Image (cartoon, rainbow, N blue to C red; front, side, top):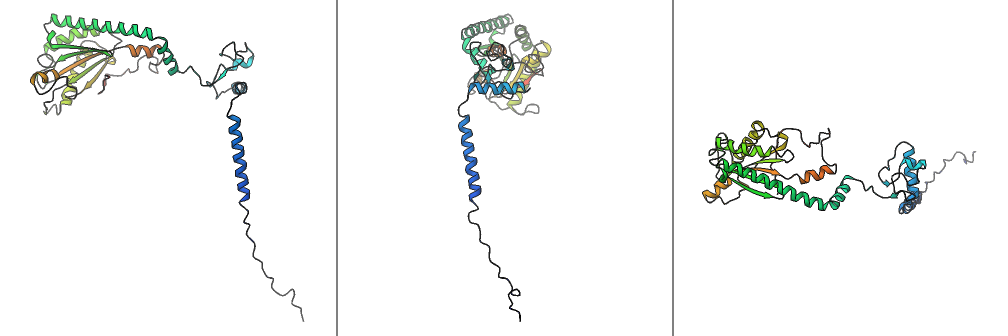
Length: 312
């Protein structure tokens, strides 16, 4: 008779769950945090000499991702030279650490600070030039007996020449130039051709009497068509370069007089030719901040632009 010791089924014991398994990832997290804080502490203060050596090392490797961050550090300094750190101060043993101070924006600010007297003199000169332009146009209008049809506004940013639409440029509700209009534009165009560097803006304006015809649905379309007629005459017939001209249409939104009288509405029906100042363009160009990618020196070589903005 068997004792049954080996024949009896073995009793299976339930495995105990390990409730301390979190300790391992927690320890890893603490290790990573410690490493991060050590790294942050290490980079909280920069050693100029070591930083310079790192930059030179990258430069010698053929590519320097730190280029422009360290003034005066270049591959030349790695070759000995005068010990000045390349383009840095020859009286210093190494380049200084910091952002490069030679960016175009910084150069412009320095130029503005250093040339304030020159800018003031240039502003006076530009104002005198535009004053002379106004006088030349006035004299030409007087010879034609049309001086009363023109008004002027000399601003800091340019000269505004206002031409009355009625009985000078156009018939009522039309955009076809009249003979007197072409005469006065001949005189104005002769003066404008002596100003090749000044941008010229042609603006169309109307009164607040609503127009609705088959050709002009709104005052906006009428003001745009009249400004275009003047602009096309200036460029196609009188030879003003299209790249020098801009067009704007304002409808009845930029009145200069009240619209509750006929005299006021007549003042608002006008075309303005604005000779803009060249001071800003000259300042940018002198600091290398203008010019087309093709090196032509022009920001726009295309046809005349349509722009509904005006700098006040």
